[in-house]
Length: 203
Length: 203
Image 1: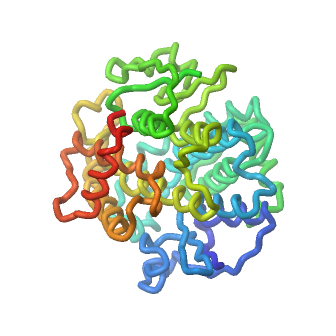
Image 2: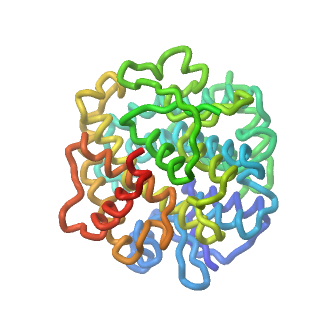
Image 3: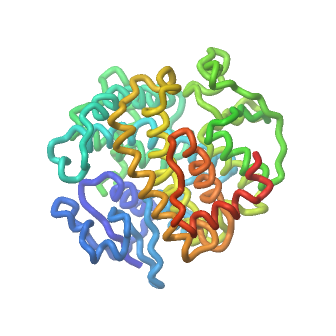
């Protein structure tokens, strides 16, 4: 088994944190996005979509999509559970993981990819207006999480889950978009400090 | 238990098809998106994100996000399985469901919401350039599926799954974007005829 990984990008980090929480160690191949190594024909054979992360199993099967890779590890090593245990827990983890993606991670990514000069060769064409439209959506996403976290310790309730990993990676990726969590969002800040203090956050 | 549902919109249809495949019948409340019933304060109490579908459980818990609702039903009634059985199957269903969403459903939705005059009051502001940028992405997404389906009966392999439901709802939603599956994509067309002929497709 082999994980194709990249530094700095938020999606590979989701998988690294997930593995750290599970205390799973596997061989890693670093793909350098900065020098467009993911566009190399050699890597395109691994993942035709030319993105990281990608997990190659010993029989050659390749799993892509961060959450699909995480789900594979959840199934082969259920403890500690990061996708929920009961039907309702599993549904709420799925819901909050998707909310963290759709309401927060997506607008952050779009502001970054369409608004950052360094991404001009990665995102063709960049649509400046699309970056502008997404900027206020980041704040709305943060508000949704802050309000929810005023009543819950973690996103999906009382247990840390993949939804927290997604939201953490999204928020830590706000830096290059020159946006930040407003000081008054104290519940979100409390949660961010809590999940950032876990050893896995260093991944 | 009560499902808030809407006609014509593709996401509520994903849940309806899923329930039909499971032969699960539950009471339904229709929320009319055309008259902005989803923006009503009464519905905002059910789902603050003001979107359908939403599933209200008997204890008042509300689950939103189509896939989260489907996952809840998969967990309380596992047969027939629509999320896969083994760890690898579950990972591949997750992967192909996400690919169908990210590579196909998302560009179709963006072309529709940002390019269709009838959506001007729903999507504020509409970004015409964003619709234009997404139009060729629909074709790329279709190609990805066509190529994969040249070697597999269904998206996640040999069994029908939620990934097929997502792709079916996406493709059937291409009509208002004035795009269609090119005639030469014979594998995708074969698959589309097959999944459309299931009784659940009428949902």
